[in-house]
Length: 491
Image (spheres, rainbow, N blue to C red):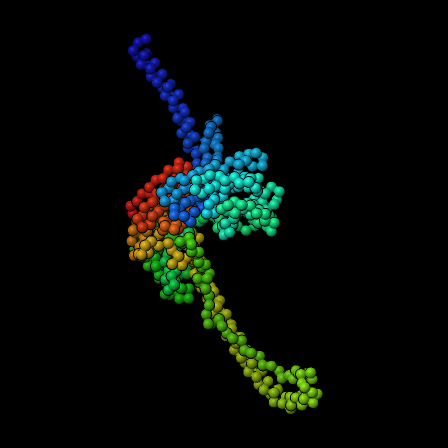
């Protein structure tokens, strides 16, 4: 074999080995691309201890085979708890109970949490010790198949219906069971427990204070149209560049309505954050319609003279006859007064009808003006709520506002969080490392906690932001990694 032939042979062998070694790597890469982790239930903030914790049910999807170009995957459900001080996974327990057909099938859900236990559901009730995730398996109803279950957060107890259709109450701490014959299994689950309502993104596009001063996060064109009560279709793309604006807005005096920008910062697709403890305001209530011009009293009709008394109303027949005689003697004068009052009443009714017609016209004009402003506000409220100014989430004594916004106007653009002063100056901006924020919580230690989604990481994400320092981290549910958030330079 010549040298050239030897080199070709070695090269061919090397390429073959590379292909043999590379195929498993290629398959592993293809499988990893189809891995995903999504929070299916919760997250539920456990903030009743020194360390805030976030509990949730995670659906973890892993691809395990490629057949004829088709990727086959398997999903598993886990109850997990994360320490929200540092993003450390405290424990993870698989929800693997089989359904009635013997299948590992179905989505898991959190039921609630007592001081001692976290309750979950997936084809069975799970009671986990909150400290270490140990699954408690008490004797009694929880040891047998359970058809339905609901946690009462206020009473800190579980209500279940067993396979025989009997209802039980389970103490949230001791797990002691008590028969609950007073519970109707058919109606037990008709109403959702507000304590277990799905968390949401508490945001606002407009706020009003006690003095009637408005704060908007809107495009200038939106604010101009709103000040004039002019309805516009609005374009979420064209109106993506939003500014902090402040001014007066009163549908009764449109000529005095003005909005002016506060600072020069622009927030793409920005919304203000609201403290989740405060509910939003109703625009119909804020733009209430009232006024003295609507209050037109109706004249009182005079009463025709009428004796209207019976003999039984008097002590004797003689007394009755005397009273009736006096009435008849006074009747002509009473009738004259009645007819004079009737004429005055008719004139008053004519004046009333005219005043009522004018008042109705004014009320109709007022309703039209009010409805015009409500309709002008609708595009703004479609993206975020109206709230009281005091309900906005503020930071420190300076009361900096929190603004959630995006890097650009494209759908699914990376999300940013900024603290903005009353003067409109941006104090800091953090890149959150998510494409979407689904919910926020206000922890007892003052931190902002959030849940969102990163499509690039193929994972749902938990976030913590320490607002005083403008720092934080994100926890990737798929890899269980904690990564620091980076500061974003303002452009």
